[in-house]
Image (cartoon, rainbow, N blue to C red; front, side, top):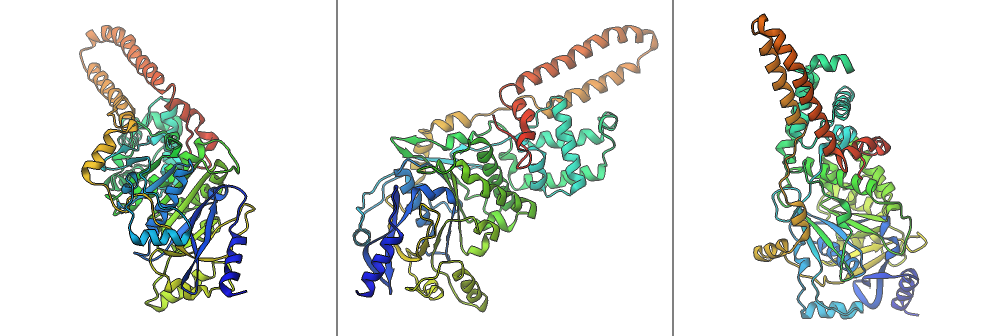
Length: 514
């Protein structure tokens, strides 16, 4: 038996599955593609997470596009973080040429150009569905971790949330949070001290500066209403999973906002989705492009939280896939949870690069057909080393793979195409509305104004004092009763439910969705 036949049998044995799977490409031996030696990924294992790594220009984003396409064709929706603006073209069919035709023939798949159901989204000023969340939904634990607060400062944030809970003050945006912080050390100082003890103005001022830093990265566009319901990610159109592309091209230089959003999204999905366990296919897959932005600027507490959620979210039927330049961009505790590994070519220009390549090679199964460290630096564009988990959770043989071409457009949409896509979106009509209901900021403003007016009244002549006292007391009582009742009514159905149940999952993020 020749070496190529032995290799073909080796791959077929390792990549033949009982359930449904997607075809990623065909095996390569000694730099020659072996036709119809298909490298597959079982749908059943897509909730085991994955890594797509490689140097700039080696084809990582197109690999991500291929996987998201094939998941969509199998009815699995996905969420794609698009920091470079490369993925919007998935809404339109690709273009067949001789190169793609030859590659598809070698792999043994038919190339049929096809556009997919795409929903454009944004947390900034990009066009699409606006993704927002309230401060109250984040809860004190997650807010403290995002702001990188110490224990004393966390205590103040916990006090603020508790005060707002008991006094029915909705915390919707960062303006609300800042207003309450100012109140506890100024007009409400005596009230707070009586209920909770003294609060240091220096501590509050430090927290305020950290909030301002977050605002400067554009967080004021993210915090607020109407809050996005993550169930809207899980949609199909004509049996195809909807590809939700979150356009982040204008926040590449704002890593704290990106990491804040990512952690809130993972936490929300974990707490909202029911337990599913292992099923024939995942419920949802998330692809995080430029994943180093999540980890390189995050605090240790934030990274620990991400690690915990990645470990647990699998049981919800959700797979998380990190796309980055080198595997070392992802913490070891997260790497250890990844079942799918797709490694594109790496560059070795320095001694440090060569050490990184040696370390990367050690993360892959041993192979009698490859010297991994050599293959890592010699692969061309559209080639990758691949290993996945089979249906029993066992790693498949390492395979140098010629990857299939995307069936959708490998380019961005034009401005007019984006406008058309956004105008047809039902979610844009649902979420892109302006809501500015009465919250902590307005309620405290009214309370402070009423207190100031009362103080002014007390300075008037004593002769009129008795009349004022008799008329003012029921008026003020009625005003505050109305405020309390109106605020409580507004909480019913959404905010008050989250705040009453936040403690149930507080160990993860301090919030609970309905």
